[in-house]
Structure formats: C-alpha cells, structure tokens
Picture (cartoon, one colour):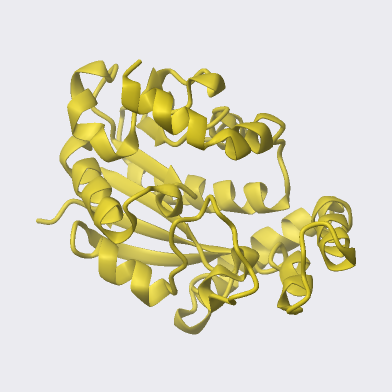
Length: 261
C-alpha cells in the first residue's frame, strides 16, 4: 500500500464507519436494478460473461446487489480504503497506474456514488473518467452514478454541508465535466421515492441531530424501508428516469458512458 493510500484512509474515517455497517436498502435496490439492466442490455448476444471493475467498491456490496438481480458476471472490487478489504487497493484518480494489478481488462467499470468524493473536484473527475475510458475494453461501458437530490446536493443550500462530498453539481454541470472525457450514451434518473426522506433538509434549521435530523433518519431508515416500496420505486425509476425533465430531479443519476470514438 502506498503512502498516498494511507493518507486517504485517514481522511475517510467517516465513510469507513458509515459504509462498514451498510446493508441493502431502498435506494440501493433501485440503483442496482438500473445498473444491472444497462449491463444486461449491453451484453445481450455476447457469449462471454461481463467482467466488472467496481471502483470505490467499499464493502463490495455491489456484488451482492447485482447477483440478486440475476446478472451473471465476473467481479473485481477496488477501493483506496484497505479497511474495506477490496480485491485491489487503489486510488481511483491513479487508475492508469494499476492496469497490471487488474485480473483482466474490464468490460464494465462502475463508479457508483464515487466521483463526488474525489479530492480535486472537476479536474479529478475528468481525469478519472478519462483513465476509465483508457482501461475499459473496447466498446465497454463506464457507468457513473452521481448525486442529485441526495441530501439536496443539486440545490446547493448553504445550510447543508456534507464534508465527504467535494462537489455539488446539477445534472448539466456533471454532464459538462464528464463529456470532456467520455461519450455519454444515455442518462437515466434513479430514485423518486427514496429522495423523499430528505425533505426535512429544506428547513434552514436542519441539523444532523436536532428534530429535523431525527425525522430524516427515521424516514430513511424506517418509513421508507417498508418492503412494498421497493417494487414501486423500481417501477417509478424505470418509467420516470427516462424522461428528460426528470432525469436530474431524483436521488441520483446514471451516466452510461463509452470511450470517445
């Protein structure tokens, strides 16, 4: 492990604590339904199993979610946090330096709620996307999920601050950066019910541990984890997520990218 990795690990203890206890939830269910459908559509007619490099994999829960959708795949999880015990410890912003560490050349690279965490902001995002396009197999996919109404990111309210997110962009701003490094072939909104727990954050008095914060945590961890909401959320996302006016007004957005031709 490099000194850089050690430094990043120290700076990400919040995420280690949070994600180490992560479990399948409403947002994760709909996110991976969307991602799985895109991979299945891309791989239709192929005889080989898609090889997925999951960058920023944390506890590799993506593997569980994708397997639950019925997708068959080979998997390699990569993260700069050794505490997560990924298959490969690497810094996403230096992916090109780790080509020889990969078990194979990936057909699909996923960056699921990762780009907003990169130090360096727009420059780091563009560089990382460019490196992904260089590493992915010819014709392969780079799937980036970016936040929109997650913690009301795209609204950029001054009273809200989530220190692990280095940027807060609208969908247009995200696309303007990503398009410098990759061709965006499709844009799909994700999560229209799972965004509702964030409504208490509209209050300028919202704090993580006051009554507004407690309401948020209750809505997200209890109310909106009611089982029947999962198929409803999947149905809404499959329908509304395709509409241009609603692709950024949701929990997050999937950018389906390929290397520039």
